[in-house]
Image 1: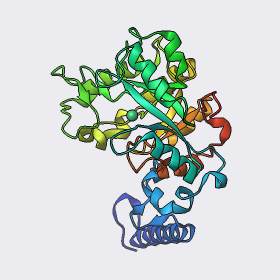
Image 2: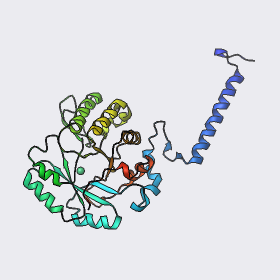
Image 3: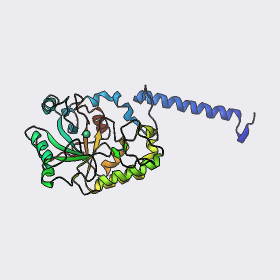
Image 4: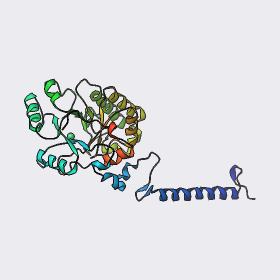
Length: 305
Ligand SMILES: [Zn+2]
C-alpha cells in the first residue's frame, strides 16, 4: 500500500475523508430536519440566532393573551407624530400597556416646574409615567418628592464621554462615531456604564445596554468580554436595576439575558419609538420566549394603571 507522510496510507485518508463527508451529510440532514438550516446560513457556534428571529414570526406576532409574559412597552415617547391619545388608543387596540418617557435634558425637563407639568400632563391617562435622564447628575436640580411621583426612571448609556483618544463624546448610534482604538472606547464605555449603574440617583431600568458604534460592531463578541458583561450584571444586581430589552436595535443578546436572569435580574420591553411604530415588539417577544422569560422575570411599575 502507498505510504503517505505521518504514517497514514492513501486508503486511511480516503476512509477519514469519507467519514468526514458522511458526518457532514448527517449534520446537514440534522439541520434541515430540525429547521436550523435557514436561508441566511447555518447558525454559528456562538448561537447568534437572534438574527433569524424574523423566521419565527409566530412568536413575534403573538398577542398579550398568547405569551407567558406581560406585554408592557416602557419606552415610548410622545412627538409631533404621536399624541398621548394615539398611544392610549393603541393600548386599547393591542392590549399592550405603555410607559411614556421624557428626557431630563436641556431639550426636555430642566427644572421642577417642567417636571411637574410633565407629570400633570399624563396623570389622567392609563399609562405609566417614566423619566429618561441623559447623564449622571441629572437629579441635582429636581426635588426628590416630584421625581418620586414618576413611576420609574430609565437611563441608557448611549452618550459616552471621552469615548476616543481625541477626547470626543461619542453618540453610539451615529454611524460616523470615530473610534480609532476599540479598547480605548471600551474603557471609557465601561466607566460610563458604571457611573450610571453605581450612582446614588434614582434608577429602575438600564435601557439599551451593550449597543456598540457601527465601526466596531464586527468585534462585538471580542469587546464584550465575559468579565465586562459580568461586571454590568453585578452592578445592576447590587441596586436591583432592571435590564431593558430594546426592540429598535435588538439588544441585549441571548447569552447576556440568560446570565442576567440567572443572577435574578428583571427585564423590561422597550420599543424605543415615537410614532406609529410604538408597540412593535418583535425582537422583545422573540428573545423573551427563547430565553424562557415569564411574568416573574419582569419589572412592572408598582402603580396600577
Ligand atoms: Zn428614549
